[in-house]
Amino acid sequence: MTSFQYKTRGTCSQMIQITVTDDDTIEEVSFLGGCQGNLTGIGSLVRGMKIDDVIARLSGTQCGYKGTSCPDQLARALKAYKEQKQ
Image (cartoon, helix red, strand yellow):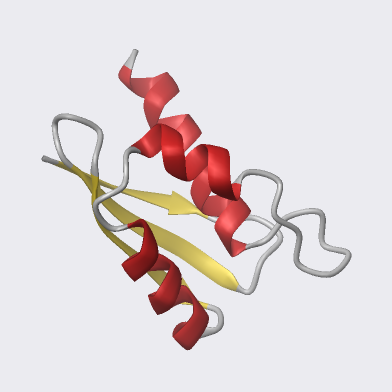
């Protein structure tokens, strides 16, 4: 199991803490800052999902005119994790 943090950019949340299993399954996601009800919900929804499935579902999600969102930042964090892992 691996845990890592990702500093978000362009969102109300400042950081995402992510734990993944050795087979690339999301074990836990928690956000620092932002809309806690929504972000806790996102964490619950992605728990048990494969990294690639989360990236496919959340990449490009927009929050207003920000050009990103907390779900998009989660997808970016997971992409960065996969790249670093290779």
